[in-house]
Length: 268
Image 1 (cartoon, one colour):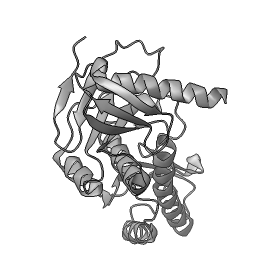
Image 2: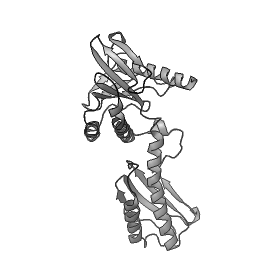
Image 3: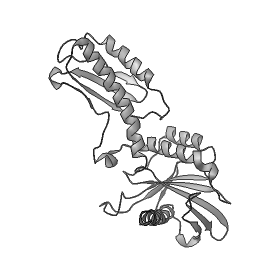
Image 4: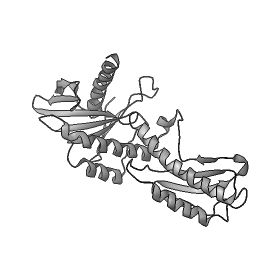
């Protein structure tokens, strides 16, 4: 019960932060319903329009999903490189590259494994001796392998640059591209549930970003958000805000409409 009360108190604080970041005065909004899940809040704006507001923490609840999908890609890469090392008699390797995106949970990675294995087969000559390196990069749907370096004394396959694993600085080190990937994951999840929301008026989706501020949204992501939304939410707002109360950065949330791309800057 205490944990639930704490969560609701945080949601109330986030509601105020969202409205403030949009330049709204809380006095113009009357709270009709709170503590529900369909949506989190129902508000009346200036005594007239009823608006539902659904809030979601962009990072903390989806970072686990992001890592799971990121890890799926990395395991396929490790498996393909390990098999190539077995064939050529190598002891270990270091793989340099990066994942610029992540697959959907439903995506089958067999094609990635097959195409990478074929690529490594073509590079077998380069990897036939200790300290050998692949002669060209390998690009795949979610990133690129810049180089596979055979190092027999290493005795394992390590990926450098692909996955951040359990690095405690992961959250603060997310790139803008990674934040946009998380936006798409969260919007897709919330749109799927939107049919069960109960509200007499339009519903806004507020995504609370407690990571580095995202002030510019790529046109490709904006278009994808609109495609995923299909008009289910009246507005989809990203609110940049401090990670938590101990965050040394001054409160400077900036709200961004993820459908229109419009940015709102609150007055400090």
